[in-house]
Length: 217
Image (cartoon, rainbow, N blue to C red; front, side):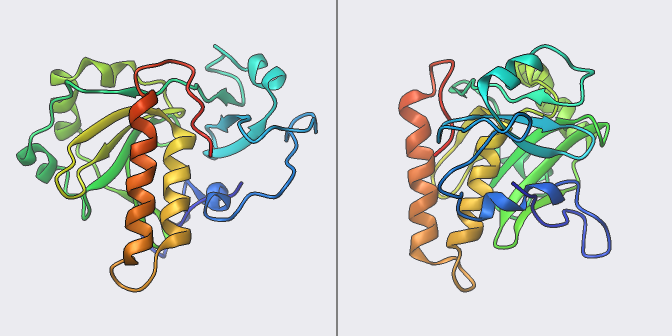
């Protein structure tokens, strides 16, 4: 699994450069990148905070990095929660200065701040996020202070009439990034990509109130 494009312009290096493979189809058989054990389609992931590299892992290896924030890798949790009472007004969204109505936010150890990323035809693109805007959201939504750094994110869907907010594992966000990148056609994306986005979020809804949800597809 390799990264998405440079979030800060063509002149810099993306902190997501190691995640580009989410935009490609997975191989028929995958193995744990730590011990080479065969993996099931719904296998776990680890994140290397220093590079933001996502690593495919068997459950046994993933357990080794549970609850170890100073270790080289962090285990990506399976928790997926629909935040039905999340408070985010249209005015607050505008203050985030995001070019599209779909984005995710996570606390990056490497960057030392909260990072906002929105999907694009070329991959995930990072947007500048003011601390003032984020602190205001934290004050109104305590769940944001509970997100595990590097491995959990707030996923916001405001496409069309939707006003949906989810607490999700970071690999689900990059699955969405890859889905959009691989299905985008022309200037507007085409009907297929918007149907895929609709299906992605429809798939989150039925299971969003349970912990331990598998977020791989």
